[in-house]
Image 1: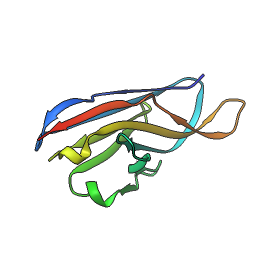
Image 2 (image 1 turned 60 degrees about the vertical axis):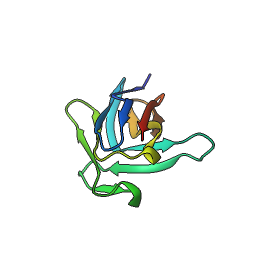
Image 3 (image 1 turned 180 degrees about the horizontal axis):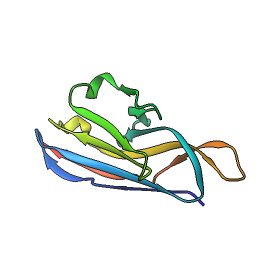
Length: 120
């Protein structure tokens, strides 16, 4: 069974920083893309940032220059460093991983979400 466990969310003032982590565990054979999405109340879930197995990154325009995604393949962990946070960054942040398990095929797996709240 695969688990994605996020941590690092919380309450921060505008202009502050947070670092999210997402650790993947289970019977994993390989991980391709990893990334972060976020969902504000009443809104759809939107892409924040992705990183490939080759460390190529992609960011939503709204976070470019403020957020940095990275990964540690030895730890099966993806990170999201967030700087200059704005109230509009307030959302539940979800990590995902496109991975291959032993005896199965490639699938996307999601974490349970971590709340980020930015006060003005």
